[in-house]
Amino acid sequence: MIAVVVVWGTNYTLVKDALEGMPARAFMSLRFGLAALAMGLVLLAVEGHKPMPWKAFLRLTALGFVGNTLYQLCFIEGLARTTAANSGMLTAVSPVVTAALGAALGIERLRRPVVAGLSLAVVGTLLVVGARGPNLGASTWTGDALIVGSSLCWSIYTVGTRAVGEGISALRVTAITMLTGAPGVVLAGASQVIEMDASRVGASGWVALVYSALVPLVLAYFVWFRSVQQVGTNRTTLYGTGIPVVAALTAWAVRGERPTLFQVLGAALILTGVLISRRKDTAITKA
Image (cartoon, rainbow, N blue to C red):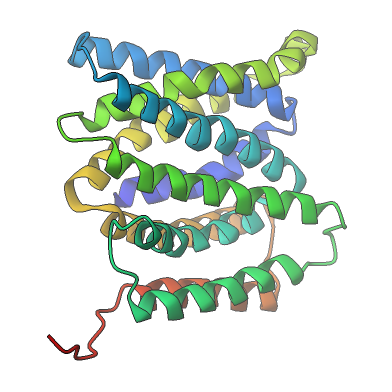
């Protein structure tokens, strides 16, 4: 899971650089189409074809739409409109939102530390969004909102995978949700792919596309959902608190996106809220 944190944290800067030479939705369409194809081939090679209950398949299809189609659209369009550092810091609220959704759906009890953590994370998110640097224009509001929307989609996706039923492997869950979510993603970027002048995309752009498809999407997705099945959503999403730190440091080192003081404070509040939400509720309850 530490490797997943590093891969996803550095992916913001990698994708941001790739978007400078390729239209956003074209990159998204090609990247996710390749990832879904690769994941489907891996599933066939490892597990082969297995029948699945129709109800479970419909549930995975719905999760694929939310966690892949909507998530990818929000993520790529949001990243194209804001900075890599801002994107990484805003996703820090995802673990707390995941915990709150899990409680709302009855997967786990909403403890007081989660409520306190969520409150801090909301304040921190507002600070990150509001504390803009001198080079960030009004258009970043749209990008920031889309990144927050992608985090919400990811939280719903993560919690939803716990309710698909037993006996379905993490690999199958990941592959089916990617394959069912792929048509919407590919169609959303099809027009830009057709209009794109491929000769203007450098070798580094194609390498970034292939790497971003096979490592952050295929390999990291599988590891993430295997962890969700084995240790649960809360312990898995705890690792996610390191993603914004890696994202901000990478963007600072590679792109020179130096965060403002209030953005650092906002990120600190989000991470503090996440850590508080992990504490055990020591209050004594009556039997």
